[in-house]
Amino acid sequence: PPPVFFFNIMRETEILSGLVGSEMCIRDRYGVVIIHTPKCASTTIRSHIMKGGPCNLNDFDEREDYKLLTVLRNPITRFFSGVTTALHSPEYDYYYEDNNYKVGEWREKIMFTLSEVKKGKYFNIHVVPQVWFHKDKEGNPFGVEDYLKFEDFENEIKRTLSKDVTPVNSNANPIRETGIETLINDQEVLSEIRAAYSEDFKCYSEKIGEEI
Image (cartoon, rainbow, N blue to C red; front, side, top):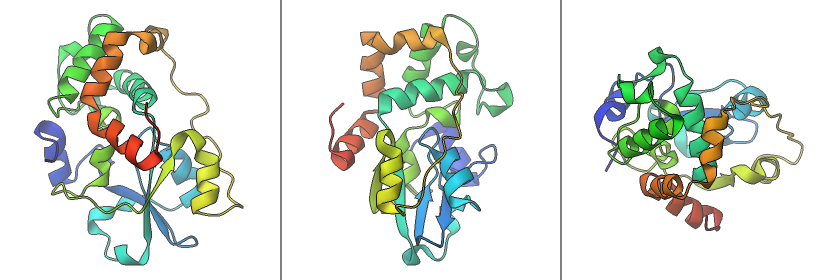
């Protein structure tokens, strides 16, 4: 079923701090549509490859004329990148208020975030599961035709678009937070990530062909 609580309401009303879960970028030259998934090279795609997007895939009437692509990222590294951005975001980017995102140690904030994700509650777009963006506002799959591996992004772009395309990393200076980075070897945190993002792990395994 589609996610519930706050984020599902946002999808239905198509209000998401300027970003809709079903955003896409169109590139007529290559005949493709790429779903905008936060923390999956979307800024790079929008800035240096597609140039002209994004727009709402739910309202796209020419869907059959394009090949639908999306980028998949290792759910563990994506979560750490996403939650770091989310917890450093201004409060007006939060979809609901909760002091558990504001006080306490980094580990406490992250464990609370994961407990909420397991309930289908997302306080910021950067912690929403990747597979959520692959569905329409009713929760039905868009029908992605090819999945690009984030960890091999440059070669994947050449494979699916053109060998002449050379992506430029638009996030060369991501937010760094030592207190969060040290948790990447915390087995309890990793276990909670697997539980909270189980669909992402399954999708990555099936579509990329690698177990994490």
